[in-house]
Length: 227
Image 1 (cartoon, one colour):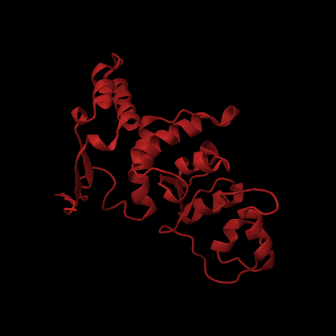
Image 2 (cartoon, one colour):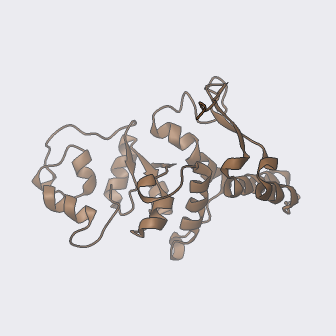
Image 3 (tube, helix red, strand yellow):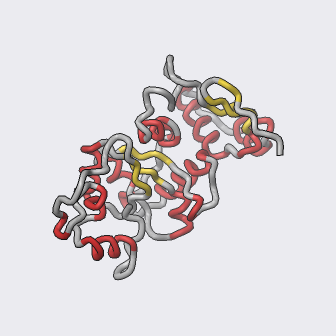
């Protein structure tokens, strides 16, 4: 939704021109007849996730927040397509849940930590006051619990709260020399809490697939079948 705002023949222009609606979101909200008149039931809600939302109107963001609809934010694909950047500050301020996603149709990355790294770079580079250096905990949330919330499964997984499924990666920094070096030799704050955040940020930015020593789903180690 609202990914390409190229004038005349872009995605948004095509949707508005085809349906005669006031906003792209209206077509998902059951208002897909000319003038955004009611034409069917809404598709918005706690189990609805709309990808990209780069050029959303303020009213669209407010409606997504009202209905509990989430955004799958794919910053890696934004770097490939060059069709704009989802405004992080405005989107989050509207109350919309933003979860990170990989978009292989217009990108090259499956590993969510790499997507988190691109997320940081994209949004610190937004122009003027829109630019923001995302907090490490905010990046971790977008990469984990926000995704569970987007699936309406926050009660079952997404963090280490007691009673939830144990879905996690086991990281061995020694398996990936650059990560080992960054974590072992990086300068840390004397404040313990600040040092923890610095280590988390380093892990999110430096994690690569070779450092993943194990994948656990519902508490059981996932083993790839032999080739």
